[in-house]
Length: 249
Image (cartoon, rainbow, N blue to C red; front, side):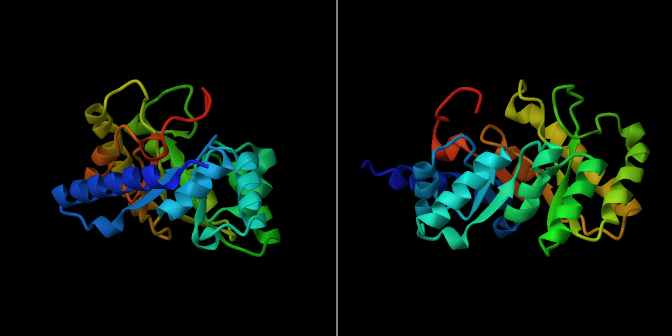
């Protein structure tokens, strides 16, 4: 068997160093930023290697695929598996709400009131309060999930849904998540990260019962910029794990 963990560990440490440098440039404490290693479409052996390499948080885009990996690692009594957090970072169909409520430590990509109500019901059945982030589409792309938030003059229109979710008893709103347009360069992404920060400030003043502490933004191509602009969670896959096994994953 090839040693998968060593090269992953080297790339992981490089990314952590880059996060630390970006935080210091912005006058931030590097420990205030958490790294989510994105394992979507990666096989279980690569996920296990990432855990052995030191990954503490794993992010998945597809609920069923993620649960298969979680259960496979549990059945193998995988080393360090119990110390790992699993985060859901992709769009979730309503029929997958029960999987999210039962298996994840944080749901980054909550993008609708009806989905929130459904996840809330399943979280109650699971006997837990699920931490969530609200996903906003700050770039105006029709293909992207999230509440539309590119037009700042329309932000008051978001308050009904946000207040509705904030009132759900089995969800704990902790902040916001976004993905800037894929076609732009890292520096151009800064505008969108800044917009999400302004949206956070807007919501903080109008929905004060929520502690808006988290900003999930930044991926392999632009995470240093995201950290400079206030990200508390960065979602990085290929820069740590290498190319995904097949296109479209």
